[in-house]
Image: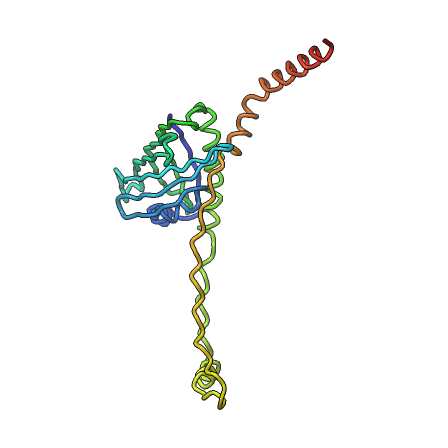
Amino acid sequence: MELNHRFTVPIGVEETWAHFNDIASVAECFPGAQVTEADESSFSGSVKVKLGPIALQYNGSGTFVEKDADAHRFVVDAKGKDKRGNGTAGAKVTVSMSDAGGSTDVSVETDLAITGKPAQFGRGVMQDVSDKLLGQFVACLEQRLAAPEPAPEEETPVGAAAAASVAASAPAAPGAPAAPPAAPPPPRPAPEPEALDLGSAVLPVLLRSYWKQAAVALVVLVVLRRLLRRR
């Protein structure tokens, strides 16, 4: 199944190329994705997917089979398998970038092969769903790239530092217990990525594509119900 997408990001091509080579950072903008290991030539991670009441988690890895910094083009071969054995997914993704007067046009061509529950949707539905997901990805990416650089932390004023030093070195009052040293705050655990809700993405597409058939089926059901009530 071949899927094609194009979008533009509001930064130069060199900066875009550098950002896309940081796979772990890029994955944070894709719903349900998490990169656990990455280097210059490969990466591994997982993607959580919800399909109605069914929860899938694809664990897999990817390899950069081609990478041309001068042409701003790379090819990734990725494979994954649901941890419960409910299906597999494989994709060969070709990303090309070109300068667009200060911005960057990005082309993504995906050769996708899937088995299991998600495979029941045809190419047309998968293209529409991937378009919607890509829109979310690009919006997140643009917000991140357009965010201002964090301001450097302000240094403690000399007077405040001196006062803190004096207070720390002052002897405790007679008979008063010594104050225990302040414990450092515990590290915050990394947030778990939210699962990609494929059901909520697919349902609007199905309604838009097959609303006529659904309306006919609804009319037939209403007529049958009335006929059965008369008996």
